[in-house]
Length: 303
Image (tube, rainbow, N blue to C red; front, side, top):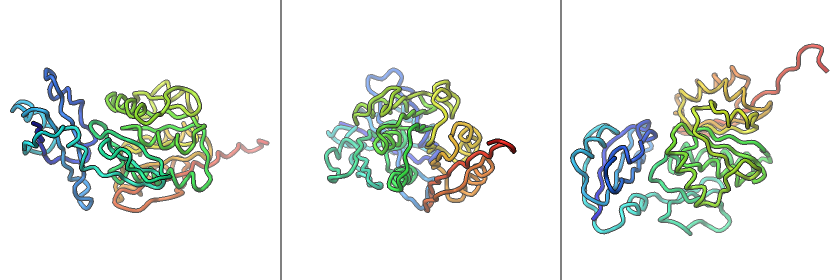
C-alpha cells in the first residue's frame, strides 16, 4: 500500500524542501516530496504532497506540518508505486523547442523537440512552473535570434534543467551550474546522467558546484561569463546584481526569473544601476527578464 499526505504551503516553502532524510532519519524508506501550484491566479498558495510506502507516523506528520502551513490530510492510495503516483499528474511541458517530462511520460515527446526527463521528487524546477518554462522559452529565443554563448552559469540550478537546455542550444559552450542546496546539486547530477549530460570542465560539459550566489572559487575561476541564468527570487536577484555585473563580459546577457510581476520593476532598476538594459520581458504573473550588460566606456584618451 502507498500513502499520501497533503498540506498547504507557500511558494517559498515549496522551494525550500529539505532532504526527506530529515523527516525520517531512522526510517528504512524516505517519502517522495512534491510541491505544485494548483491555481496560477493564487501564485503564493501551493500544495505540498508527501508520498510514503507505508502509513506515516504521527511524528513524521508533525515534522511534515512544519514544512507547510497546517496539518496534513492523509489518504491511502492502494497498491501503485508511490513514486509513480507522485509524478503521474505532472504532464509534459512544452516551452519553445523543449519538452520536459517526468519518468511516467518517457517517450512522449514530439519528433523534432528537445526532451529532458526530470524527476520531480526533490528539487524545484521541473518545467511545471511559469518561471522555469519561461526561462526555457527565453533561452530558445536567444538561440533563434542568432545569439551564441561560450561560457554559461546557471545560478540556483535546482534540477539542472536550465543548464541542460543551455548546453543543448550551445553544445560547444562550457557551463557551470550552482545551488546553495547540496541536495539540489546531487539531484542535478542524477538528472544529468539520465539525460546524457556530460559532466566536467571542458566544452560541451557541465560543472556542478554548491555555492551561495557567486561566492565559489569554481565560479570565480570560470568567470567572466557571457550568459548568466538566475531563476531564484526577487530579493536575492537584486542583491546579486553587482556580482552578476562583475562576473559578466561586456555585452553579456542575464536571464532573471523567480519574481512576481509586481517585483519586476525593482529588479530592473537594480540591474539598470549596474549597467544593464532590458532586452526582453516575458509577460505574466511570473515574468522572465532578459537584460544586456552595456559595453564599458573607455577612459578619456584611451585608444
